[in-house]
Length: 116
Image (cartoon, rainbow, N blue to C red; front, side):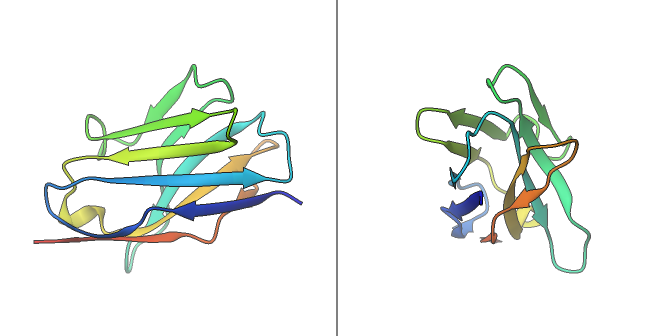
């Protein structure tokens, strides 16, 4: 049974930075990973994704140039470095694994709150 555990969320002032981590256990980690978020009153949206070998990445337009997704396959961990945080980045952030044709395994989420 694959398990995904996020960490690194918290309260930060606008313009600040946070680094989220997602540790994966119980599986090979040879699959694409993604970070998603759900803001209050909004639907879940994709933030960034990364291929299994890190060679391909995708970013939502809203975070391009500010967020960086990376992974360490030796540690079975995926990261999301978030810089120049904005109020609108406030959300619960989830990591997910695409072990099949879609993202089918999810973490419990970590809260990111950006204050003015």
